[in-house]
Amino acid sequence: MMKAILLIAAMTLPPACSALAAPLTESTFTEIINNVETVSAAGNAAPADVNELVKAPERVRTGPQSRAELVAPDQTITRVGANTIFSFADNGRTLNLEQGNVLFHAPKGLGGGTIQSGGAAAAVLGTTIIVSATPNGGLKVILLEGSGNVTLPDGTSATLHAGQLVFVLPGGTLSPVLNVNLGKLVAGSLLVNGFPDRLSSLPLIKSAILKQNKLLKSGKAVDTGKPVDAYWYPPDNGLDAIDHGTYQVGAPTPISPAGSPIGVAGALGPPSGPGARGFAPVTSLPVVR
Image (cartoon, one colour):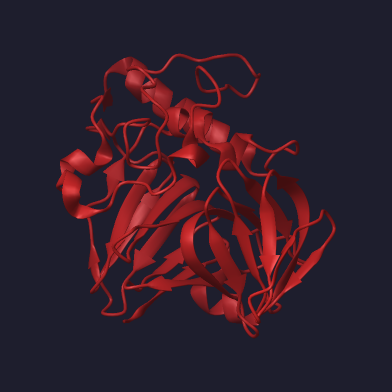
């Protein structure tokens, strides 16, 4: 089975520059919520502790309603959702995502890394993204701010802007790029809001939310109220989120830069994961820059 390769790099650098970045083979726990474990190469599990250093080939494993944040020496942030298993490789800037959901933020000018999962392969440039391993061996990539590209080994690519997602299917196929209600996604994402410390890129995410909300308010974009999967994938295709708990509704409405609620068309819906019923697509949406 071909492994998925997901390259994450700061948008201010060309792809080749990521190779110059320091190896990403370790990170330190900065936040631990509920059941988080480290698993040795021999398979021995132990509770994780704040300030504990995780090195390859140790794995990080989270339980239900659990999550963790790790920070690398170059300040690359990895936030790990519930029911997730991942590890660093012992060389380069490679992370192995066995299951679950992770948020990555690569500071500007510091390059990115690589994620491996099963069944799909794509190179991705972006600053703050959420990646989910889908049950069928594919990936779901959501861009929260800035711009990025998802490129398959054969050169097929898709450009993403804030509030857009794409599925990477096993066997090397990209779904159409879909616009999602970014305000709803962020309001319900514990990977964004579920930690005591504010995500450093949150001001940029809020700015993208405001731009999209203006389009919704003006009628240039429409919240369809339908799940993302309904637009391209049959419900039984195994592409719905595997970890709804990570994306349960964490706030009644999105937040503005001033911290006050701002309206969004459509109801929030029940707790859900990326691409499910918590944040429906918006249609007729121009590029949000």
